Image 1 (tube, rainbow, N blue to C red):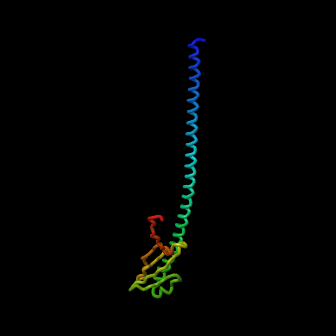
Image 2 (image 1 turned 30 degrees about the vertical axis):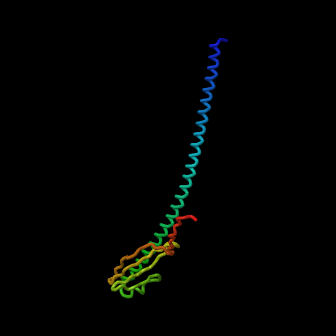
Image 3 (image 1 turned 180 degrees about the horizontal axis):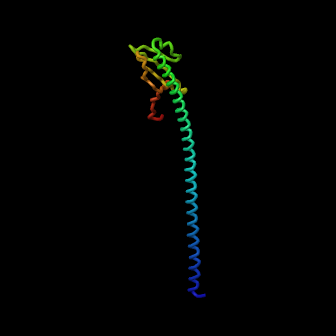
Length: 160
């Protein structure tokens, strides 16, 4: 064999090695990138599931709170109608009111107050003004907390 043939053979072997090495390295990088992409997708899927569960819980609590408020609001409207009907009846209307009303005279007008529980932490407070002619108007329609508020204004600036 001559020198030119040997050089071609060595060149062909080197060419095969460099192609194989480049192909093997490329496949390794592609595999690592694919694994990383799959891991990132798994993390995002887990975060999405966690967020969806938290949103569902929040939505259920909001729906319960809204339902409880409107139930109390409807009951307060019924009591409002009861006061209005009694006031239109004329003299002695205060005696026609059922339980749960507080009546107080304020000059020529009369104030009627009552509370409707919304849940174990809130109530709907209502105050009505009854005019001498029997007209009834709302002066207060407010959600109030039934629990005493205890503020904690302590801020620990230095950790001992």
